[in-house]
Length: 153
Length: 93
Image 1 (cartoon, rainbow over the protein chains, first blue to last red):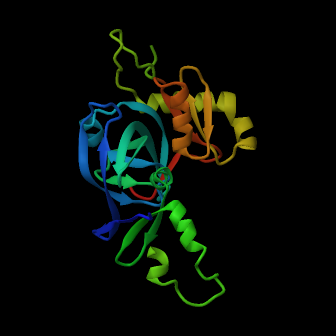
Image 2 (image 1 turned 90 degrees about the horizontal axis):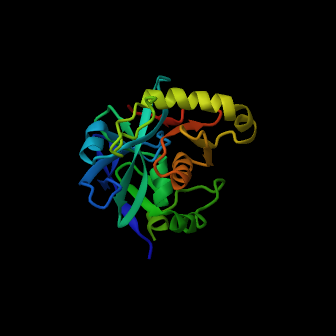
Image 3 (image 1 turned 180 degrees about the vertical axis):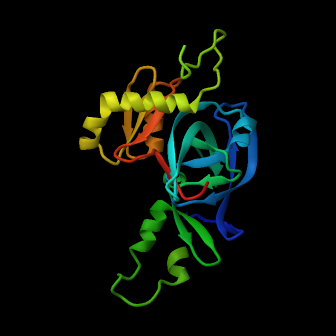
């Protein structure tokens, strides 16, 4: 059965709630983390340093990250367990000095979700279901906007 | 022991210095992989294990990292986006 997961806006940012956990079985957990969806972020997830410390994550590698203003900074990462909508994925969390959690394109890829952002609503749809829905859309040369039913059924 | 090596005498892991990983990784990448990869694997990602200098390719960052960790669970890795100045891009700080 198709699953439609609803996100929300917080201070005009599109957000999702998820749970974060360290990769080992006895790791601490942070429930109901609010993550900002950043489609300009190419990684899986970005978390503040304090969350890395609380979850007892170990730095396992590093690269660099470039920001929209062209500046570069170090991007160390540690493996984290992300629990979202009954699914669990272990992936690299980039550790940042910023205080917010970012959800990147890698998160959508790994959870196999398609993202729909509207003025007042945010939905995530299972990728396979979404492909089924878009085949019913009108071609670009046709006029009109697909109905909500076309997206959600 | 270089800053990138992490194993303490008691077997626990010491903190890792990201700057040291980046410096060592960039040097390994330039010396062993850059010329070939920029011709044949442009836009892919490479996770390079610092100790063995082995590289693991993937279409996306998480794929390259997963492959690298499967082969070397205790490894320390440098990530590069082949043909790009940095491994990651982000629009927010």
